[in-house]
Structure formats: structure tokens, C-alpha cells
Image (cartoon, rainbow, N blue to C red; front, side, top):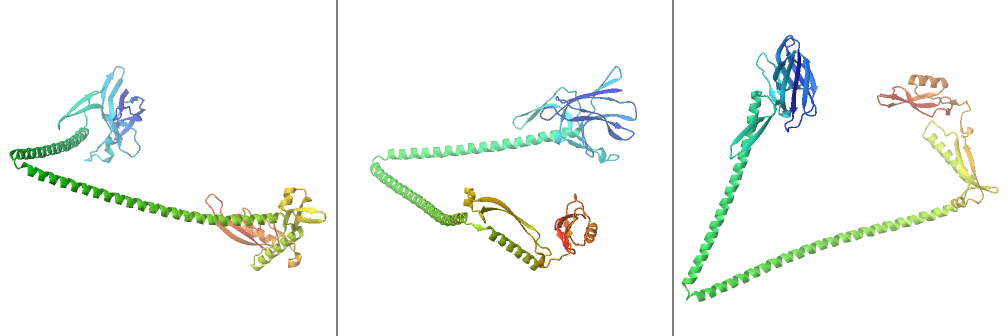
Amino acid sequence: MQWSISGSVFEADGKAASGQVELQLYDMARQLWRSAAKGSLNAKGDFALKVDLSEGAMLPALRLCETSKAKEPARVLAEGGLIKVEPGKLVRLSYGDIERLGDNAVPRSERDSPFTAADDYLLAGMPREVVKLTLQMASLRINPQVVRAQPQVQPASIQLKAQADLSKQLEVQSLELNQKAQVINTLERDKQNTGNELKQAQLKIQTLEKQLQSKPAAAGNEQIELATNQIKLQLNEQILRQSTEFELSTATLQRNLNQKNLEIAQVSERLEQLSKQRSEAAEEAARAREESERLKEQMHTQVDAGELYSNIARQLQQAQSKLNEDGVPYRLGKVSLNLKTLVNGNSMTLPTLAEIDKGNSGIFTDVALEYLPDSSTGQSSEPMVTVPDFSDLTETLARRLAGDLGLQLEAAYQSVGKNQSIGQAIRQIPAKGSTLPPGESVLVVFTQA
């Protein structure tokens, strides 16, 4: 039999809800709730599902749920619904307007036998209602109005939760009213006390006036004495006020004086820093002048090319001697220099900066020199061995290749990441193509984990 299920889902603020809903029915054979149909909410929050519920081992139990993740309690939007059977074996099931509870869903559980935790679920929806609260002097009146929905019986847990929420709101509002009433009583009591003090002061004034009117004969001396005391009191108050103002002015001036002294100290410190910076700048300027004079002198100083070449040769010899002293098993090979020299007649010198700028004093030419190691310094006359390329070879193959060529292999190891091959050569000294006497050593670096 074909079933047509419809309804609307709204959020707590009245806006249309979004997402998906799922119709579940109870399967007696498997003894669990299973999904019969799913659908999405449109822009107005409406949904329409169609499902063929054939006869079988099913209880007449249907419920509308939110689609939830696995291993989470089902969130039930509505249970039951209004059913109408139409001709042609078509059944219409309407859930009306449903308000989604969101995070305020009510847990529903029954742990008595034969129910278990697998039967627990959350009541995540309720028939949509518009509730008006009218608070009048610690009294609450509720006017429910059902919007586009057929009457439904709310679960007792939802009713208890709604009553608890309303009671809590009533308690909070009653507490606020009591606090405001206490503040009003305090203000009225202060007003009454001030009025009483004002009345007492007026009575004292009236009593003094009556006493002065009842003693006219002696009023002269008393009035003179009273006027004298008032003048003294006014003078004392004026002196005290002036003294206070003078002390305040003195304190203000002292504070200003301290501030000025602090500013003077800061300015003096700044002047000292500037003086130090000036001295440093003068020293730097003197060094710059000396460097400028030295550069000017170098611009006009000529160096003989032969002297330069022999000096380079001596430095290379010293470097070879240093290698021999340190026991480094290497020697200097061929060294090439390419220098630009100035040829003027039969002499050849290095050009100065001034001559380079002029560009017309003699002829500039490139001279290539090669320095080769002296064979008379103890080098063997045996044929040299060309160093092969050990890249990507394992240590076993590299040792075999070095041994075949008459070379010694010294192995070193370097840790690499997971994406690189392990046990292969990645670097060698000397480089491939170099020449070594037989028996010399070659350093090869292999990768390791």
C-alpha cells in the first residue's frame, strides 16, 4: 500500500528548518527500528515522502526522525501523526507543523526489562505552538494557540520540561520585582527622613524668631554679640580657606618644580647620548676618509704581473705544505687563473682603477695561467687512476668497483627521510673524473635510516 507522508519543520525562532528527515518503522522480524524513507526539507521547511509499506511482520508504529550519525541516539521529531485513507489504496500521513528543539532535546529512556540502552532516543521536536506570557504582579497567564496543526498529545516529559522552564522564569521575574520593590521602599524611606529633618530645621527657625520677638529690650546686646560672633566665625573661615588654598598652591608648585627637574634630567641625558653619537660619527668619518685615501692610492698603484703570478704560486705551495703537515691525504691539482692585464710595450702589469676608467692607456688582454703540481716533489711516476662515479651504488658494489681500480674506499653514513632510498651512495670526495695515484682513498657517503 502506498503511503504519502508530509509535514513542516521549523526552528525555535519560527524560521524554516533545513536538513533531512527520515521515516522509520518498527520491524518485528529484526526487532528494531529501520529506515523506510528519507527526504530533504525545502526552503519553507516542508517535506513530502512516499513509501510502499507492504504487508509483513510489522507493528503499526511509525516515527519521524532527523538523520543522525551512526552509534548516536535517534532524534525523534514526531511520533504518531494524523492518518487518512483515500480510495485507491493510498494512505496519507500528516505530522503538521513541528518545532525542532535543537540542543534542548529531551532524552527518552526505559531501562526496565526487557528494554535496554539500545531503545533510548531523544525527543527533538514537538507540535509548533505560539505561547504568550503575561506577567501581572507575580501571576502568570498562558494563552496557547496552535498554528496550522491538528491537536496532538504531548509526551509527559516535554510538558514537565515546559512547566519547569516557566516556573524558573516566574521565579527570576518575581525576584527582580522584589528587588525593585526594596529599592523603591528604601528611596521612599530616605525621602521621608529628609522631609522630617527639614521640618525640624524649620521649627527651630520659627522658635528662634519667636524668642527674638518676645525679648525686644535685651535684643540689642544679644544681637550685637551674635553679629560679632558671626563676623569672627566668617573671618576664621576665610583665614582657614586661604590657608588651605595656599597649601594647595604650594603643593602644586612643588609638584610642577619636580616635573621640570625630571624633564631637565631627561634632556641632559639625551644631550649626553647625542654627544656620544657625535663622537662615534666623527670617528667613523675619519675611518671613511682613511679608507678613501687608501682607495685613491690603490687606483694609481701598479702591480707587476710577474710578481702577482709568483706570489700566487708561493701561496699554492704553502697550501700544499699545510695539507702535508695536517696529514690530509690529498694534494692540489691543476689551478687555472684568467686575469686581465695591461700590455704596454714589452711590459705587462695589472691595470689600476684609473687606467680602467680611461680605457686608452695600452692594450687590455686576458692571460690564462695553469699551475700544475711539480712531479719532482715526491709524486709517483705510476699511472694515475680516474675516480669513477659511485652515485646510487650500494656499499658492496662501490667497494668492489674501487678495489678493481686499485683505490681504497672509506665509507660514511647520513640519515635520510622515509621517501629516500636506503644504502645508496649520494656523495663522494674527490668528485668523479678526478685522478688519483693507485692506493689512494676515496670517501663515499651512503644513506641510512
